[in-house]
Length: 632
Image (tube, rainbow, N blue to C red):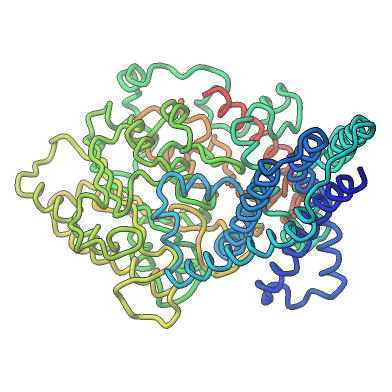
């Protein structure tokens, strides 16, 4: 009896020890971030992180506990092999999670969750493109070494010595006690007896977010996020449904009825008003082109107070454009940003909607509206169009032609993300030049989207202008944009073209900037081309999800089914920016800049002349967003 009880307790405590030791290792690896942390901070990180460690240790002790119960009645070689195999697998899984989390934190600024798992499953090559082979090799070696070390711990303290048979009179008492101890694992797993079950936010203890991040158990965080993936209707319940409806109705475009079913899109197009209040374009049915730039931010443009000498072409184009000076990204990754831009649909903090083709097929899209109006649709991307289920989303949106890395010669695929931006732009320009040979005004217009990728980690580009590799990559993509626009402007299609230039998500510069700062989400938006009436600067606040309603309104096309998108130029429409990252949300209005950490359960940014003004609106907005996702 005593031998089995000791092994059960040791199993639990050894897992706790492994998880507790990961925290100082994490902080040591990111020593530059924790340079000002005191010895007390390090100890508090370990101490406050213990609840998650206890919980996960409880989960991982459950199966060994069951094996110990079985061993009371049947001891044999199969039981030892099963236990050994279990600890080998769990040691490897825990090691992989820890090392992957360690490597990704520098890029994403949050602990490991379901997001990279989704990316890896959709396209392993693209998911690993951000890191070099040297890093991958070191990571694999570290994983194996750590897994071997963890297994040795359990081999020495739990697997040896071998279990002895239990005498017949003691079998039932031993079984009863082991069952009781196993049942008691429910306490650390659940986090006690209160109504609130254990969650990642339980370990947040400091005003310094990096200390809270260090206290998080990445394996628990991953498990929790995977468990939330499909539970949309029950997440983010801040208030009664009718209260949320009333608040969100005030935030929607005047022509959108919050709970009404959208009219038939084709019928709406046929019945649309000929009397437009908008006159930014010189023609009713211009050619429309989007350039979606990987990871750009306002901090790269001198025009917006950023670095000089980086995005010089965007700076120049801003003076010839409808230039939005207070524009915000909706999220932190491309799969979220594309849905925001092309469907006018906000990103969610705990899931990627692209993961669910059955839901994305019900989203509105700019492409589909334009397709029904007679536009020909094409999408250009130099990488794997299957990454993050992007192809299924684009097809559901209405795109008939999708150009991706498979459409380029292998000799051209020199980037870890497929082809470099200059090759991609050259392909689009070649198609435009071929079309120009027979181009005539009044022919069926085109909606084209080009998505760049060279300014993504690891920032390796065939270009050398700046010493900083990250800034140099942005300067490279900017040079590709500038060269493309200059060449395109010589073609006959240019005078009838509206060109929308926008980043795909929040910027990757400056490096290591906190995700929970408003400046992190500021990005440029330029609408240029030969078909704009005149350049202007727009001071109104907006975000990526507003591009859909704004563009379609200018084209005299309906956008009532884009319920989360607002026409930036409509004075009757509310003007704000909403954004999310795991697991936080923010809202920016003229009088309040507000960011709320859902795990911490409070605002971490509350600035402006009317503090707290956005709190209830943003919470209602997120709650209604998840209602809508659940219904799709």
